[in-house]
Length: 403
Image (tube, rainbow, N blue to C red; front, side):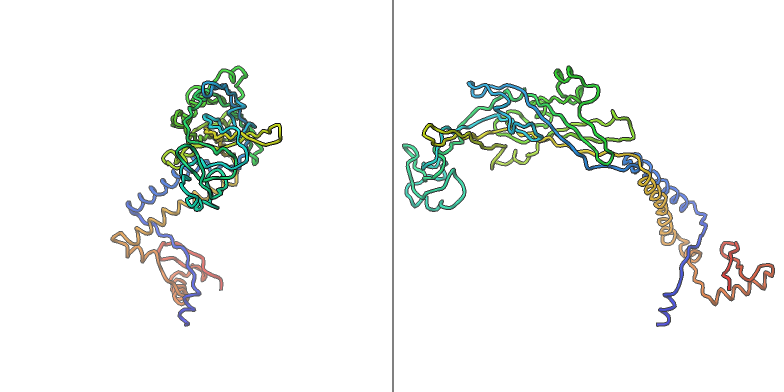
């Protein structure tokens, strides 16, 4: 117990030992050089750790689509017909194909899906109170056409037949999308838009975005966007899909304002649906409601296949600040000490003279030994005062403790 108490009340201090070894010296300087190169090249130059960064970007997006298409060789469609929703938001759809069911009214009629084929009422009772189909099943088997019977349902009749063939509106490929984006970094109260100061109204009317010559034009041709996303327009027009238009703002506010400019990239957001036979592509339904003269309500149901565009905005801004600069400078100088730790490990464990180094580096001194050495030094060096001792290891004087 007493031994434990003695070991507990001890004090360790650093002892400097100068090792004249080419191997250790080269390793020490190389490690220090690598650490400093990392902090200068990566931390300060590449990552700009001397800046404070604002990643809470605030953004607004306004979109407009222009173009005319001929659907089913009979109907000319404009932007009010094929863009949903019509408010010009950051997420919008361009309809490419329609399957319509006209003059639906509330009533009883046979299901149109072949999975509800039946020969007796008992074939339909198993579908009661189960989801699916186009209405509420009644449990009866009724005539669908001259050759097939299906289960009866209650709902909007006649039931939709969505497996008919329809050709998409191929003119969509040449439609244009206008994107107006404004951003703000609240930490710096910095605002910017994707209209560069040099852009004129004439340029807006004549330009089309491309990745080489017109990288800042806010007018995007639909076919180009799909091509940049590495997709096939014909496939998307038939089945639908979701395309992402990403606008990136990476701004260094220590530079001039014209250096803070948007960069555009394009991707297929529902890429997994390309390889999935269950509900491939993108489609949705909507209805247009009317009333007959006698007050009976009826509707036109539309199943729309569309290319959905999601405009995604991301970014961050950085500006010089003294606090992160000081933190990283201190971290750099502190990390240089890693070289000392590595050299100590090699020195004390892997070199032939490891035991000699250990004897020089580690020394245990007790109060009794200190008093004994003090008396000897005082007798052998009368010119040295009692509270001065001579270190035999490094050959210098050190001031002792006042008693």
